[in-house]
Amino acid sequence: MHVTMVYCLTSNKPKYKRMITRLLAMANLGFEEVEVNKIQHTSESLAGVPEDIKNIILSRNIDGIQVKTKHIKRDSNNREVGSVYFNLTENESLGTQKYFALAGPILKALLDGSVLVIDELDARLHPQLTNLIQEFLIRCPTTLIMLS
Image (tube, rainbow, N blue to C red; front, side, top):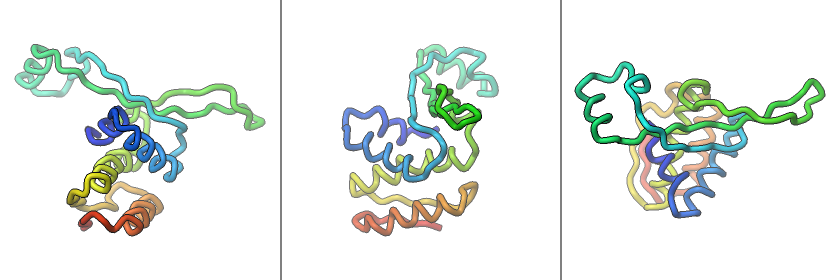
């Protein structure tokens, strides 16, 4: 799951976190911030995972991650009255999840100067987000990024 994005958000490199936050804000996805927490896996949280893999994860105490997005709650007069956190994988759209998953590898490739190949960039992604990513990449021509 969104490993590179989580790395960028939790890295001790403030530059990564700043740029990822900016990249998410540019997309105007409807949330104010992202929260990443480690979670302890249980048999219930690993429902659907094959038993042998589940046993390895549980026996080795491998932590999981939970990514939440913070949304502002507003009253009928559009005044801010609080906030609510959504679980990224359960409550956000597939397009938001894909943008989130792509933003980390794109940013890391740009910062590290590595090669990145993205297959079917536009699958499950809103056309405006696809255009935003393409415009962002055009402005940063120092890395080879291949799209199909």
